[in-house]
Image (cartoon, rainbow, N blue to C red; front, side):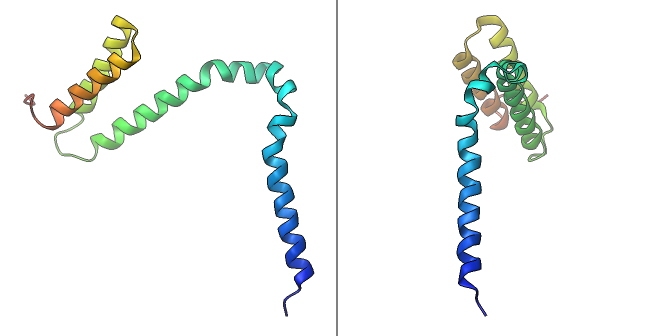
Length: 111
């Protein structure tokens, strides 16, 4: 019932398609580096991804406890203010994590 020729050719075709998809960016790299859409994406996509990941994480964590979204909002505001103030990503992250942990562990009472 098994047709070994069919199975081997299907595996070979899947391998070629996989190899082609992985090799395509390297083959088209010279064209992609000068394309206006790629240049625009290179400038704005990292920031957009970080904002989306942050919003998704904050919204997901806000639903996981009964205190409301206050720890997430306080931590997010702390990060934004620290980043605007000092423009130092590590400091902003550390302060935001500290504020979030302080609120979640109720070191700071929720009024």
